[in-house]
Length: 371
Image (cartoon, rainbow, N blue to C red; front, side, top):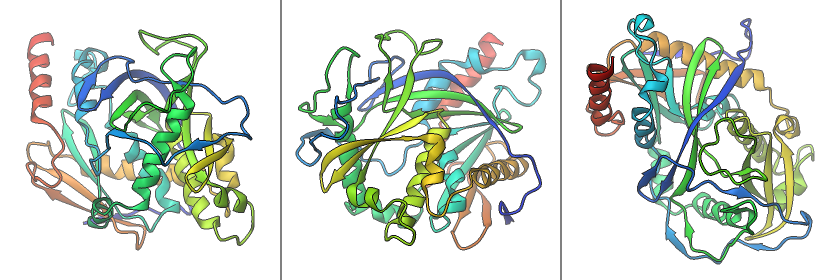
């Protein structure tokens, strides 16, 4: 079975995204903490044009091994916040939570990027429980093979983590300390509740750091701060930007759409980019989010990205009607056309299983006890 998404010519209104920061949690290796313990503060260097950050020489206490991340930690956060997410009993009907779709930001980012990254194949699986659809992205066989072979992308990922150590600290009054061992599994996440067109969304995003003069210890909700996204890029790519027909134009188109979509989904206003010569960052460049797509050659159209994402969610809502206990749904994009194939798969399929039975037990217990 399949459906086609034509986002080249559309007559519908472009969906708008309204976002509310709804929660946060920390991951320290394998441990989950409902707090701000892994949150970092952005400490900009005094001179953006004169830095020397060595990204190559570091010791690592933990490496980020999983090829893709399921919903385990987010489902735990939801199970601890049922009271904030459930609909009033009189308004529930077939839908218990006041949310249409629950996922990681990466799922929505993949959808937003697809019109400009059509060579990238992807798999997104869906499970429906009490009226809400849970989405989880999985790697294709090609991506799994790439991940298994220590690719350059993995190395650059570690370099990006090391760059963060030069740019963030545990307190706003502290200086960054890049001498400490690099723990790639220590992460801070924010939960966002959003409306996208006529779809309600709840998704989690990893956050590199915040900009705040004040130390925040209890909650980010209601506080004044700015979310910060940190990236690295080679000097060669930076010097080639804006050169029509330049060698790196296509690469930067993919980078621009990827960076824009990531920031768009978390209301991050700018990217702080480390410009590296081989493994050493030599300068820092700021890219306002609203300018990212204008910098790409050719210029990207964000409306096309938003329409593709909306149309996909429209179709998923239409197709995913059976409960997770009956089946899950697999959506597959092979990059050869605008067609998305889908099929029903067994709810206990080991390859694509992501919806935890323990989460369902907690939800059913909550409903029987507190409703």
